[in-house]
Length: 403
Image 1 (cartoon, rainbow, N blue to C red):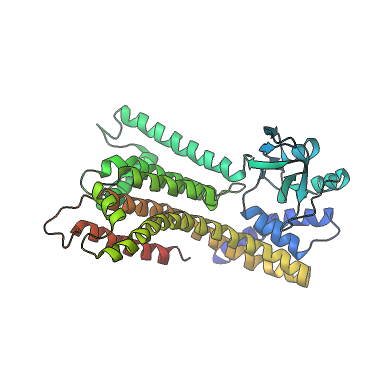
Image 2 (cartoon, rainbow, N blue to C red):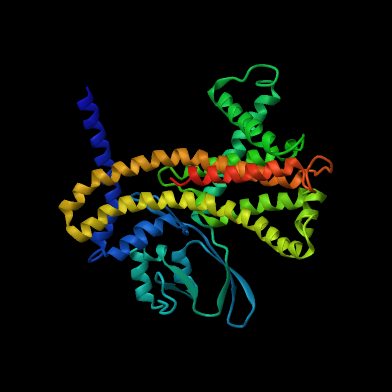
C-alpha cells in the first residue's frame, strides 16, 4: 500500500513538473535558443513582479488595458487609453525598452511585430517616442487580484451579516462549518488582537478596520497559492497603502498626550536632549509604518521568488548541463516547490496576524491616555507596557517570518 502511495506521489510530482516545463519548451521552439538571462528575467523575475497581463499559460495570456497620462509634444496633458500593450505599440507613439536599458528604444515596426509575436512586449517597459509619460495608470495583475480579494471579503461578510440579521448566530447557534469557522476567526481578532492592545473600550472603534485588514491580507495571500492567480500583497504599492491607512488612523485618533510627548519629547529630559529626541521620535513613528509595509511585501515576494527560482532551476540546469541533468532535477525542484507552497499557506495566516497585531499596537500606543500619579516620571505604566509589548511582538514577528 505504501509503495502505491509513493508511486502515485511521484507521478503527481512528475506531472506537475511536466506542466511547469510546457511554457519554456514552447518558448524554446519559438526562438533559436533560450539564454540563461531570458530564463532569469522572463521566467523567474518576469512572473514574480507585477505586469500588465494575466498569465494563463499554457492556455493563453490576457493583456490588460493600458491607461497613460501623457504630456504630448506641444506640452498639453492628455489621457490615452489602449485595450492592451499590443494595441499601445501598434496605434500609439510608443516603443519598447529591454530590461535594464536606459537608451536604445525599439521603434521599428518590424522589430515591434517580432517582439509582439514572441510575447516579449509583456516583459519589457514601454516609453513614449514623442513627449513623455507623466503617470502610468494602467490596470495591472496585482490590482486585479487586490480587487478580487476585496470582492471576496465583501461578499463573505455580506452573506454572514445577512445570516446574523435573520438571527442565525445571534438568537440561535451558528449553522454550518463556514459560519462557525468565520466566527472563530472574528472572535480571535477581537479577543487576541484588538482587546489586549487597545485600551479600554476604544477597541470597538478600531475593530472593523482590524478585521478588514486581517481578512483582506489573508485572502490576498491565499490567492497567491491559486494556480494562474497571484498575491497582491507581494506588491509594495498594496502593502504601502495599507500601512498608510494604519498611519492615518494613528494620526487621526492619537491622544493629546501622545502628540505632546511626540512633539516636545520626554517632559523630564533637558532641553538639548528633547531637541534631539523629537526628530528621532518622528522618524521612528514613520519608520514603524514603513517597516509594516516592507515586512509584508518582502515575505510574500520572497516566497514567490523561491518558488519561481526552484522551477527555473530545471531550465537553468537544462541550459548549462543538458536534458538528462534537467530531468534529474525535476523531482527535487518540484518536491521543494510543494514544500514551499505548504509553508506559504502557513505564512499567509502568520503575515495577516502580524500586520494586524502591529497595527493594533501602533493604534493602542497612540490612543492611550496618560495619567499623572503612579506612572513614573511623566510616563504612564500602560504606555511603557505597550512599548515593551511592541518590542516583543516585533521580535517574534521577525523570528516567525524569517522562513
